[in-house]
Image (cartoon, rainbow, N blue to C red; front, top):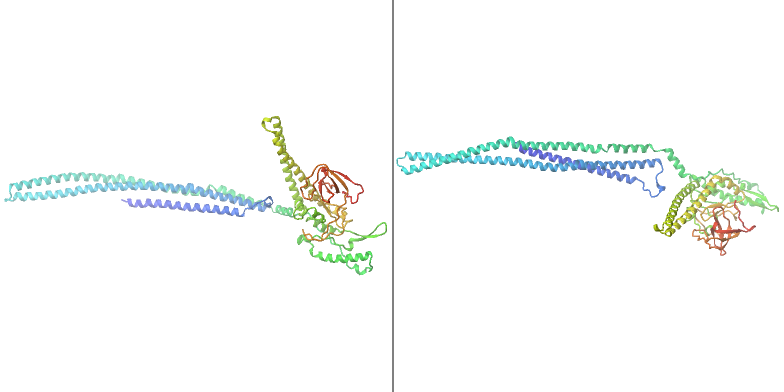
Amino acid sequence: DQFDSLDKHTQWGIDFLERYAKFVKERIEIEQNYAKQLRNLVKKYCPKRSSKDEEPRFTSCIAFFNILNELNDYAGQREVVAEEMAHRVYGELMRYAHDLKTERKMHLQEGRKAQQYLDMCWKQMDNSKKKFERECREAEKAQQSYERLDNDTNATKADVEKAKQQLNLRTHMADENKNEYAAQLQNFNGEQHKHFYVVIPQIYKQLQEMDERRTIKLSECYRGFADSERKVIPIISKCLEGMILAAKSVDERRDSQMVVDSFKSGFEPPGDFPFEDYSQHIYRTISDGTISASKQESGKVDAKTTVGKAKGKLWLFGKKPKPQSPPLTPTSLFTSSTPNGSQFLTFSIEPVHYCMNEIKTGKPRIPSFRSLKRGWSVKMGPALEDFSHLPPEQRRKKLQQRIDELNRELQKESDQKDALNKMKDVYEKNPQMGDPGSLQPKLAETMNNIDRLRMEIHKNEAWLSEVEGKTGGRGDRRHSSDINHLVTQGRESPEGSYTDDANQEVRGPPQQHGHHEFDDEFEDDDPLPAIGHCKAIYPFDGHNEGTLAMKEGEVLYIIEEDKGDGWTRARRQNGEEGYVPTSYIDVTLEKNSKGAVTYI
């Protein structure tokens, strides 16, 4: 009798199941959005490394990037949770809800059919009952009519007989309807008993089992909802442990040492400034054409120069001063006598000037305007190739890195050459496997690459030895050369390396100029005198800037000997100058030639 109530309850159960499925779906969307936002956050703060120089080196940076990686893995685990919930909970709930609706519909249809059948049986029984009742009334009326005619003396025998026949007919029909009613009543009672004791209880039992399965399914989904997250807890714990390990890996001492190594210049601190006595001009003897007069004039010049330079000291913590000539102080001037008795001025550079000059070597040096004629540029050329624009320590590191890279490339090319030679030997022994001549172009290209890499390694090693030589014995060499010369000018090789040439003639102090800027007032120096001649044994292309092309058998003038870097400076008859490989020429030096250069 509670069929409608059960109908409403089962419908509520399905609605609750779908509501929970909707809850799981929204939770899945939250997990997916959370993971997506975490990945976007990691991507936003991850470094965009375009070169090796931009890779993180500090332990704090490396730890942060490790934390980002762990967070990215954590976001992946959130995606795993969402996928597990979608597959194990939400998908299962949606499939079960569909099956549950189908099963509930079937049970309700069976219950309605049973109720309809019972109603039909009741209608048949009721109809037979009403018919039996009607026939009984008709039979009673026929009975009364017969008795009235039978007692009436005026009635004819025919009327009485007809009334009797009608009574018999109605009585017979009443008996038949009585029997039919009794059968219908018995049938209805049986169906009603079956309906309430068999059919409906069975349907209710099926609905109960269906609702219990729905409840069990909800319980399983609740458990699966929690298990989806519990499964990833160990991995999430590892991610968090990785973050803790990354935090513990931060080493402040190592980071500080990296900062020191990164910015270590290799420059020596400037020495003490000498005392400059400006009171000497008070006691000097005014006499034109004497040494004292020359000292007075130079002292005046020094006063202006020194005052102008006093603003830019301590450049390590401020603005770096522009290159300028050493000041001429009274302490840096003294007189010397020649054998014929004449006197001349000799300049001596104090240690502080040596320090300042060494500081100025942090930028590319241009010894004379002749460098421009050879095509060297401060911004484009060997100044960038040999890292001469960097401080000594940083330059040494860069050169060492380049040498290591070139050695690795050379090893690869050597291995390739060995492989090509082995393949060539195999082809020569077994011509059917291939043509040995087909490997010749590749072999020649490999040999050219090997030669090129060896020249590059030799060139960079020369620069490295120059830097190491400067940082190792800078003080003694500089001091000894500065005693006899005001300024030591450098000569460049084709690779851009500088060497201290003690015999380069210097007309006077170098012109002051700004960083990488040249004035139009520079005048070209006089051409260097020839110290010999040479004959080209092999042809040389001279593609590199600053080199001189030559043909086999061509005769050239030598104006500078090989300084140990494998290059000799030569000049044609038309005045064109440049460097040529020493191993490509046959050198003949002239003894006692004017301007001959000797290198120690």
